Structure formats: C-alpha cells, structure tokens
Length: 82
Image 1: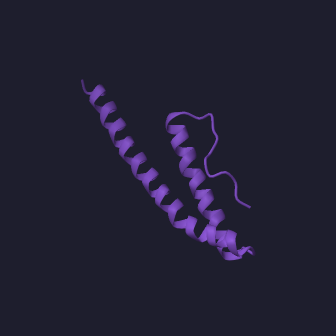
Image 2: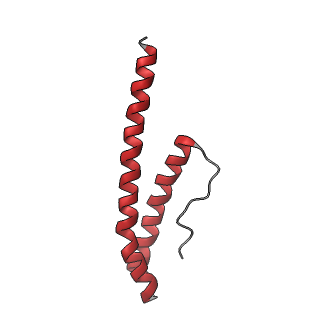
C-alpha cells in the first residue's frame, strides 16, 4: 500500500536531495505496480493520476540537482584556479 509521499529524513543538503530523488523513484514504482495490479478502483485511479505527477517532480528534482552540481563544480574550479 502507499506510504507518506513526503520523506521524513534527518539528511541535509546533497544527501537530502539524493534521498528525495530515490524516494520518488520508489514511489513511482509502487504507484505503477498499483496501477497494474491494484484491486480497489479508487486507489488504482489515485495511482494512475499520481504517476505523471511524481514523474514530473522527479524530472524537476533531477534537473535542479544537475544545475546545482554545475554551480558547485564551477565554484570549486574557480577556487582552485585562483
């Protein structure tokens, strides 16, 4: 069955971001399983509408993570070359 969509973690910074991305991947997998194998029509409909939303959240999180990594790497490079 479904668990809380908001991860509860004590992680901070990049570790929190990675946990968020990993959690969304797991959630999408669970929702897709419910869409395929679910018995309750209302829960199945909830999962069906949730998959694209979670997919969009995951894509945004990955994009933001990539942008942050570029900024961090650029900062580190500029500090090293000074």
